[in-house]
Image (cartoon, rainbow, N blue to C red; front, top):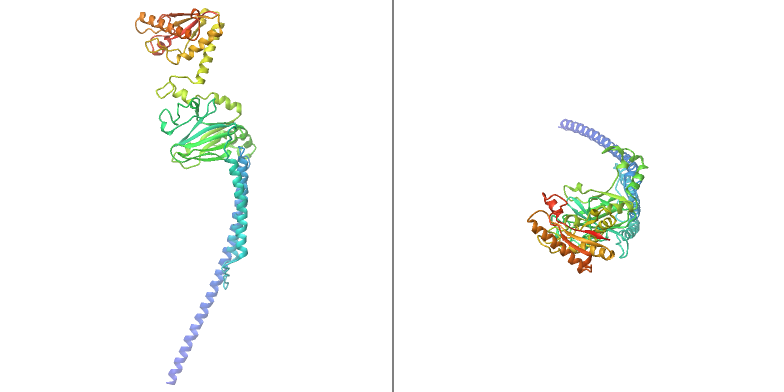
Amino acid sequence: MTGLLALLSVILIAIIAVQIGKVSELAAKIRGEQEMQDATNRRQGNYMMIFMILFLVFVIGISVYYQNYMLGFGPHKSASEHGSSLDSLFKVTTFFTGIVFFITQILTFYFAWRYRGRHGAKAKFMPHDNKLEIVWTVIPAVVMTFLVVGGLDAWNEVMADIKPDEEVLEIEATGFQFGWNLRYPGPDGLIGEKNFRMIDASNPLGQNWKDEKNVDDFLATELVLPVGQKVRVRITAQDVLHNFYLPQFRVKMDAVPGMPTYFVFTPTKTTEEYRMELRKYPEYNVPDPNDPEKMLWETFDYELACAELCGKGHYSMRRLVRVVSPEEYADWAATQPSYYLSNVRFTDADPNKDKLFDSEINARKAEFQQGLDQALSATDAAAKRVALKYVSFTTGGAELTPLSKYELDNLAEAMSKNAAMRVELAGHTDSEGDDAMNLALSEERATAVQAYLVSKGVDASRLVARGYGETQPTDTNDTEAGRANNRRTEFRILAQ
């Protein structure tokens, strides 16, 4: 029995020895893995520091490399008076936020390296620190105060409206899917009223044709501005939200349906002057991919864009912007036809068919005076005839239409100024109808003109009324246009 117990004790001791060896081997492995984990943590911390350095160098490098492409830097300084204040505000904001950016990036990666996992290390908990609380509360508050105050100053300067007596060019930009209707005032310098209820195929903006300010307004396919002239843009939209964006002028304002907005700015650089600035930089002295025969600076243009995602045709909202000298602008504006006079005047949509506007009266008077001067200076008897182009009668009758009075008033005024002038008033018809009836009708019309002039104070003895019927055509009677030319009233100077 004693021997058996001794044997069992030996076996138990052997088992314990084996287990102790296994435990020692396992402990050694564990110690090796911890060392390996520490090495891995150390390596990852180093990688983070390297990444931080490369990342910050990349940020600085790419900013320097692309600075001449960014608004506010290099050649892309503002092309408007107010733009410099906005650029300064953005640069100051970028400076302070840049400091925060670099500090936070450096600390983030530094802490990842400094406080990497280590065997036996314990975390230190700081539930509260008054100094840190003061630092990260007071400093941002002070910086934000300066930024907000500076922003308010810039806002009040940029968004100030015009004064009542201030000279300004006011235009209107109406966004729609997908384009802009750009409306300019005519010679009167005033933009007419509009109402969305009046929009139709012949009136895309809903202009109120009873408002005489609309008479000379014109629509343009490009935005043309005179340099040095303060501009006020009325901004609105017809369908969805758009945005009136002129990046080089630091102009950006939403175009909201039913809520008109505005922006006031003064262009300071013509398109050509901006191109000359770009020419100084090597980045723009390379061929334009779209026009390899020209350099990038040569093909540069200001642009009007929509800065809202207004639909799948959003890209087509782009419009060309040209800034020119005041003289070039005046020449351009003088060639733009009035939308009303070109598309609506004397049509069924025109509510002013029975009257002329001052611009039309003056234009017709100048045209009449030119014809009269030529006739007075002519030596050939045939050249002493002047057509009364704007005298008309009721169809088939001899009653003067209301608009005829303006032309006849010009003749009455000319007779008053030229007391020795005697004229023959001649009526003509086309070849349609009976010859005798045409002759009688032409005489009646000439007599009607004579009666009107007498009513305006012209002595009847200075007027001879005569009808020629269809006997003196000036055009063919085979077409409607030709017959219309033959139905005319004219006067011939008999004495002067």
